[in-house]
Image (cartoon, rainbow, N blue to C red; front, side, top):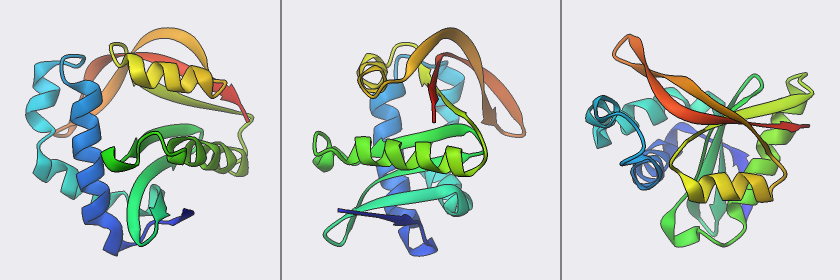
Length: 156
């Protein structure tokens, strides 16, 4: 497995992983209004727009997962279903922490949907600290929608 900056050629694979992973971790835990706008097509558009913020993990010649980092926020961490449990998520998270440090920050943060227990356990195992609930402003159609989340932080 290797980690590298994403390219435009990776957008379709990123979108597929993101869409499936987002549904797996968010359905039943976020407002219905957000689910309605997070269509498969929307993930294709968003993945293509976010290539500059994205790092991919490649297993063999397949994009197996990705992470998106902006400033001190680890915005997205997803691994394809076939690669879960392989250590890729930990590798991507470590890369995200490195990027936040390289961006000049001493602490990284991320948001996890309150009901996404699997992700919350993963971040805690990786040394992240739950700083409690807050409403994350999810971008939707030129505005935002508050999503119940927990803010996790880690010194980097």
